[in-house]
Length: 312
Length: 314
Image (cartoon, rainbow over all chains, first blue to last red; front, side, top):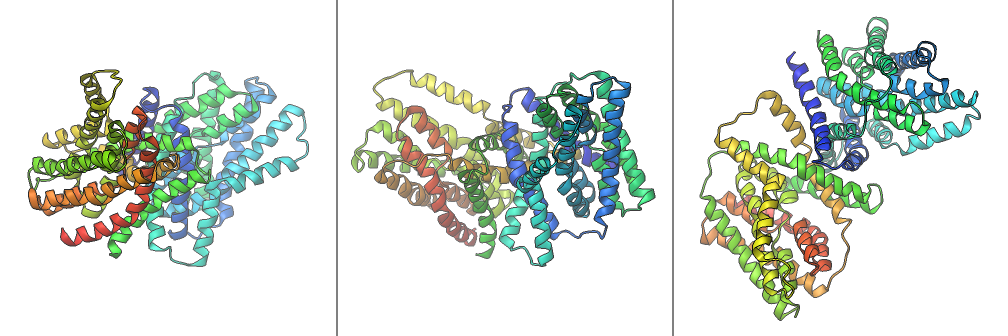
């Protein structure tokens, strides 16, 4: 109980501080963008690079980790679209952003802090494995899905994959993971000065990510349709982690820390990327926005419950 | 020496990283401003609040520390004003900004982190005292200096002073220091969860501050006269710290740690407030803004040397 509280309370307090600072206009709304820039382009890459380059890695198969994470993602994705159309009567053209809201968890800003504070460096391997493919895979899937839903056909797949590759090459988190892995394989020691600089930057990563997550929530409104929102949140916060648990623990018997990271990541609330995608698609924007803010709020309780369960 | 280098290099490394990120267009100019906002309004106040809570018994009288530092400030200020009139032949309204550049140290972004990492938590008390007084005292001096020589009097000096005091009360850094000392006197012990949460936020303070400092230096224009720049730098980097050291060590005979902190703070590069003052009255803006960048570069070497020497003395 104690470890769970000392993990959950500080993390969500920082999100709350960020949110309140934005709401009370203590920090400007645009601060979120500037701070996120620092967080994503410098601080988190430094943290990922240093942890991956130096941490002890558990010997697990990447395929097992990916299966345990992406099978639940695919299931939530499909279920969200099917239920949205068949049960809730929403237009087929709304399904890509709705599925993205049900499957795209906030693994970076919330998942990394939670996983690292519970399992420390042992979490680095599975974190790297999931983060390095998470956003490119889901963005590509959502883009293709949206094209099919709107035009009745995916069209040429080439441009979509080319965009994904371009994103990949520009994504600083992924570059840091690759660089860290390469450094690891060289077996070289990090020079003391570089290691100190990376450690200092890395120390800023988690607090800066949490405050900027809170700040960014100020911009979201809970205004989606209640049935869609309920369905998305049930899938994201309950169905996905439950499936991840079943696959990671009884089926694949992953090592404890690895399984925990996979399940924690699967339990993360809808990430801002789902909202960005919905705005880009111009469909179901309210549902995505509501899922981000309400999901983050509810995740206070679901992550507490999850960490308590995992602790047993 | 190695120990000093392991403390100093990451500091200047992070400043350089922030500077290069903006210069190369990797981080936007706006990012620089908002990083400063996050650091100054949230992370640093929490960092300082926590530092105040851990202050122990004071080894000397705070009044003597303040006297030593501001006697040094006054002498450096007068020198800067005289140099402006006699050597540079610029008007005394410019002198207000030039003197501010020659005496206003970057104590919040660079001084406090360096002092605490080099000398440990004992450095928090003298550092806090100096940063809470430095900004108001120098703003008041600069404002009075400017108003005394300005021909178009827009407002009375009194109302200008009132505004400074008001701004000060609203300054989150000063508030954190006041609340922190009050809590320390009241014997507050943070409950474990609040302790973890504030320490998580506080750990962002120093790195964000340093990257933000570098990033904001990259946004300043490089301009100004060579002779004015030389005046500011000679006083700020050499004369001011030497005078403060003499007052601290020989006139007021401060405890060694306090002498070290006062000297270190005087030796810091020019702080952003000097630029804000120059920009507000539109006097010597080019020189003062340029001096922030140049002095930060020079102090990489002077502060490294100074810290090495101070550690052998303290």
